[in-house]
Every structure is written in structure tokens, then in C-alpha cells.
Length: 94
Image (cartoon, rainbow, N blue to C red; front, side, top):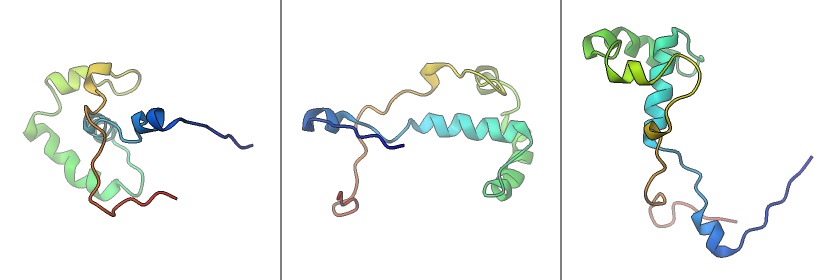
């Protein structure tokens, strides 16, 4: 199965592939609280997980706002205000 999307230049310029930096905070927090980790993330999780209580991350607002599963409030993952900026020559579209 294939799909084809057609965009005019103005709409294509508004398209975002990046997510909010807070999205990474939230998903990392969930992963650390879950006790599990994908093998790629396991070394980091094993180093970071024991530090959570000392940093107060096992309680407080972050723990209250990010449940172990389910919906995360939208205001925690806002869209970036500007498109990402890449160094000149970093991205070369085809």
C-alpha cells in the first residue's frame, strides 16, 4: 500500500516533523517510572532511575501531571513556536 500527499509550497512550509522538547521529558519520565526500558535505552535508564528520588521526581507536579499510562495534558507538549533551524547545508532535500 502506498500513499501520495500533494502540498502547495506555503502549506509545506508549515509542516512540522519535530515535536515539543517537553514531549521527550514526558516520555522519558514515563519510561523511568515504568521500571522497564528498551535495550537501546536500558543503560541510560539504569543510571537515571536511582537518581529520581534525590531529584524529587518521584513526587511533585511532574509526577502528578504525567500518569504512568494514558493521556498527558496537551499543555505539557506545546508545538514549538518556530520551525527548527538547521545549519546551512545540514539538510539537503531531494
